[in-house]
Image (cartoon, rainbow, N blue to C red; front, side, top):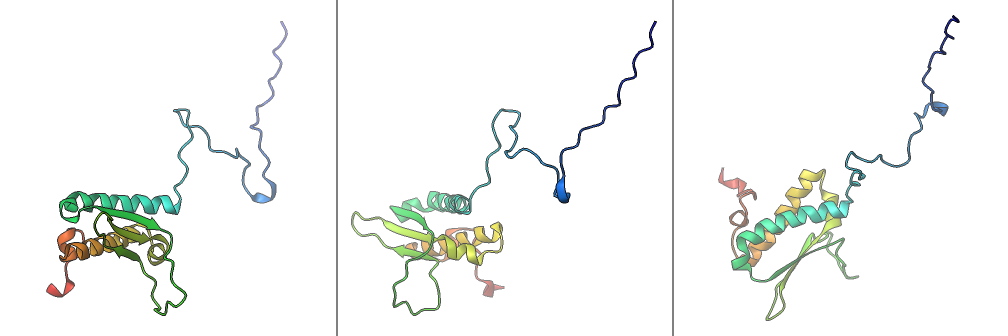
Length: 156
């Protein structure tokens, strides 16, 4: 009986790691167990639109009977006239409707994102802007429009 041949020791094959930059890997994300790729990260515009939609849906559901027809919109930045002399950039625009024209509330995404430190801060800023504009339309105090809006701090 012949002695079994010694098996060579299996050494894991190493992928190239030139210049310490890490292992080479696939250029695309692997498929999940369901056979679909994980969703790509959302763009800043999509994140902002989701925040705006959440705020507007909640407020409009509560105040739609009093507001009437209101169009909500998001634009990247305001278009300022050449003779704009104010040092401030508008964060939103409110144009009251008349007759068959609906009221239009436009929120400007880029100036708000510029002022926000993180997503929670952006959510708070969008809520503040929308609540203040709706309060202006209804002729009531902003803290009456939404309970998340802080009431006057002077009342302490």
